[in-house]
Length: 262
Ligand SMILES: [Zn+2]
Image 1 (tube, rainbow, N blue to C red):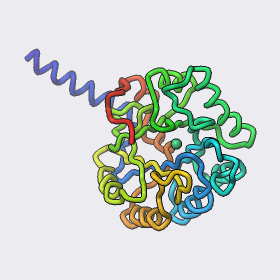
Image 2: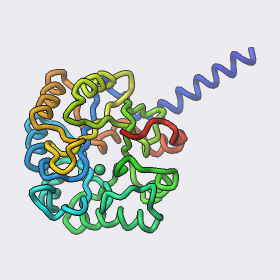
Image 3: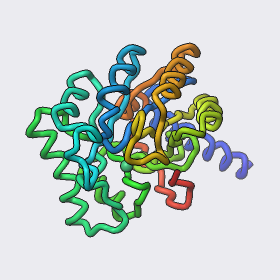
Image 4: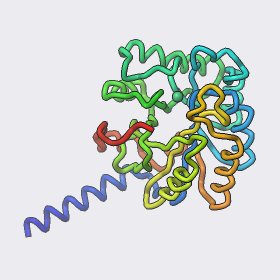
């Protein structure tokens, strides 16, 4: 009898905390598109296509060294502001694409604040989400993001995001390249049973970083695939409609041993 009650209590405790983390059920076929590093093609190719399909997305921007100022390679801030105006999310990827695990807290703070101040001065919505450059992260960085009131932080890991077990600062994702179409299509299948698929893209195309290049033709195929199968494609900030992030952070212990790199 005692064991039975313990089991019953455990089950109800799990159910209770889960129902608290979720404001509403995660629908099947929920996909988050995220775009890193601010390459020029995200303004010229990606944004217009996303608009055509009516999809949301998050753009994790930085001033990628050393060529950020070359507007043939990277977006300028006027273009980043245009993404915000178009309704897309502009979020923080540090000033210099810094490996966060190697920074002091004051360096990390400066990296975050540069992007925050830039957005503030241009009238872009305050960045509330973060993506770890190069997937570099550690426990100290998570604590600091919390102190700075960040909501979500995206990592890698090639697995689906389970809001009931993955900490909001350790959101896993798959990254696209020119050769992993089958892997990505297969990954989209996992957007079901409470799990969300988060995709990391870079340039479409990506001239400076060919190992994360997504050719425009392939990108258009992905969007058509998502549209034809009625996926709901949103930005990271849109997940707050489903997830009570404060409760998730209070009840999920960050697990840095899970796969978090792509
Ligand atoms: Zn990056």
